[in-house]
Each structure stands twice: as structure tokens, then as C-alpha cells.
Amino acid sequence: MEDQGTRDEVAAGWRIVFPACAAVVPLGLALGVLVVQSGLAWWWAPVLAAVVFAGSMEFLLVGLLAAAAPLAQIAVSTLLVNFRHVFYALSFPLHRVTGGGWKAYSTFALTDEAYALTATPESVRWSRARIISIQAFFHLVWVSCVLAGAGLGMLIPPQIVGLDFAVTALFVVLGIEAYKVRRSLPVPALALGCAILAVLISRENMLLIAMGLFVAALICSRFLTVRRRRLA
Image: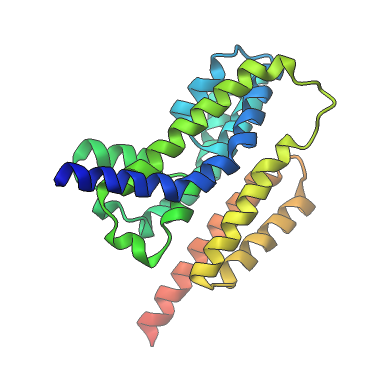
């Protein structure tokens, strides 16, 4: 009975994550193509997908590696781009994942998609098997798509455009779904304002500037909220 229950939970996790897996197929292919066309060896594609496993950072990292950027620049870029995961952890149902190894993997595999799929009131009651299956299936599909993209990269004509828009479309959809659950307008408005301001400051460094501004704004907002509650 326990094995059957685990299989049911794994199947439920697959059903939940399948739409996200289907959505990142073109994105994974695009990343694989980008790795090959940037002059890196094809095996960098599955390595980045499996070890880094952070979509937006992987795209940025390909350019940094191709340009032989200093390690310090890569470290700062990674910190700013992925710092949002600190806030993800505050509401991610990690308490439902028991076992040191499983908890470590779940922390590593906490992506934007995994967070969006678990940012629901029901997730606080999900089992470890369901949460891990969501993350593991997505991880497997992502690595497979990136590897396929690297293998087919040389066969895709350079005239084909639009694959790079997949990440934007995916995050827009996930953002809309997350808003439907939370119904919180200030945070999305703040993120949009930071993005617009970053574009006005520097188009070339828009991502780093926007993430830096957004993180700083969230920290200041949290500080002011706590201070206001203490004074009340």
C-alpha cells in the first residue's frame, strides 16, 4: 500500500509539472543551440543544465564563459540573478521534504518553475514524493532538451529567430499564474518599475541592474514594514 501511495504521488507530481516541462522545450533547445553557436564544446550544454540548473543564469553564463569573463564577475552576476531564490525558500514547502539527501536536492532544484508550481495553499500538505518528483522530472526534461539542442544546434539555420523569446513568454505565464494565487499587485509593479529603470540606466547591463534594484527595494520594504509594526 505504501509503494502504491508513493507511485500515485509521483504520478501526481508528473501531472502537475508536465505543462511546465512542455513550455521549456523550446527554451532548452535554444540554450543548447546558444552553447554550440557561442563556440563552446557541446558537452558544456548538459553540464550547465545539470549542475547550474538556473535557466536565466545559464543563458547569461554562456556569454560570460564565451567571453572568458573573470571569476569575480561571474560570481557577482550569479549572486544578483539568483538572489531571488532566498525569498522563494521562505514559502517553499521544504518542511515537507524529509531526509538530508532529499532536502539538499530539493534546495538545489528550487527553480522559478518549481516555486511557481508549489506556490499554492495546497502544497503545504503535499508529500515528499510529489514535491521531489516535480523537481526531478523538470530537471530531467531540462537537461534532455538542452542536450538535444546542442546536438541539433548545427542543423538549425541561423535565419530562424524567436527561440530566445521562450524564456520571456514562460516567465510571463508563470507570473500571471502566481498573481492569480497571491493577488498581490505591489510586488509585480515594483519588479516592473525596477526593470524599466534598469533599461533607462543601461540596456547592456539591464538584468544585473534590475535584479540589484529589486533586491534592494525588497530589503528596504521589509525593513520599513518591520519598523512600522514595532512602532505601532
